[in-house]
Structure formats: structure tokens, C-alpha cells
Amino acid sequence: MDTSTSRFTSSSWRRGVGDISRHEIAHALVQPQDPGAYGQDEETSIRAWVVEGFAEYVSCRFDRAMGDAGVRSDLAGEKFDGGLPGQDFELEYSSVGANYSLSYLAIRFIAEKGGEEALFEFVVDHYRKPTNLDQQLQKAVGMNESEFETAWAQYVRSNIR
Image 1: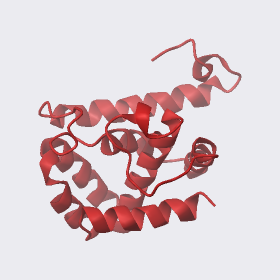
Image 2: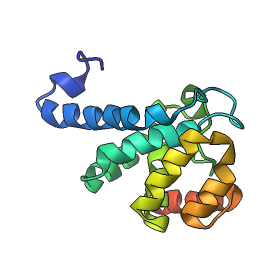
Image 3: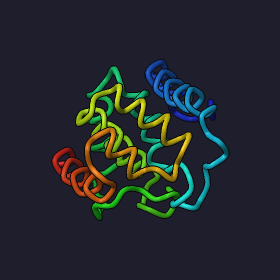
């Protein structure tokens, strides 16, 4: 963690430190499930939107208002194309934060549709077997990947108005 950033130096540093700490702990909790499959190949890799979306979900788990504020801030002025973030967050939108917020909304959508237990099972299973995304989404929310992306895009649009 870069302790020179405003998360650590602003007057509200306690909130920022808590936020980033929960995010990084979420990564640490599921990383042991990774069989070395995180990379650039979207067909065989753990999806970046699952990795970062889960960490953001855990970070905002007990403060939905903070999550909503982050989404509004990160997506302000962005032209949403309806697609899930790809593997390279640097290339998707004009801000990396937009990709984090869209990923957070994908994970939150799974939790709201299937429940948190289904969400946690989805994340662990996806880390273990990243090539089974379609089946994992089917189990978690009853939709294949295409149906999920369409329903999630509607969810995003309803949350950024």
C-alpha cells in the first residue's frame, strides 16, 4: 500500500486506511485458491472483474453508501458500453476507478441475485477453475455469461442515474 496517498494523509485517513485494508485482505483471502491462472488471456484466466470486484465488494460490504458514492464518482462522465471490464483496467475506460466500480457492481449484482453464500462460492470456484465462468454464473444467479452481462448492464444503468 502506498502510504503517501490521500487515503493515509487526509483528515479522513481512518476511513481510507480501513477501505484499502479490507480490499487487500479480500485479495489475500482468496488468492490461495488461484492455481496460477491470473493473466491477460480472458478465456483461461481469472477475470479481473471478479478479482477486483470481490475486493471492492468486501471493502464496501458494511457501508453501501460508500460503495454507491464511489460508483457515482468513478463513473461520472464515462460512456458505459454495457460490457464487463476486460483484463487490462488501464485500457477500458478513462479512469481505472471506473473499472473497479463496474467490477464492484458485477459482484454486488451476484450477491443481490443469488445471495452472499452463492457469491462467495462463485468467487472461490472461479479462482479454482477460471475456464468454467458460464457454469459458475449459472449456479450463482441462474444465467449464462451472456444473459448475466445483459442483466448486469441494466443493473449498472439503474445504479448510475
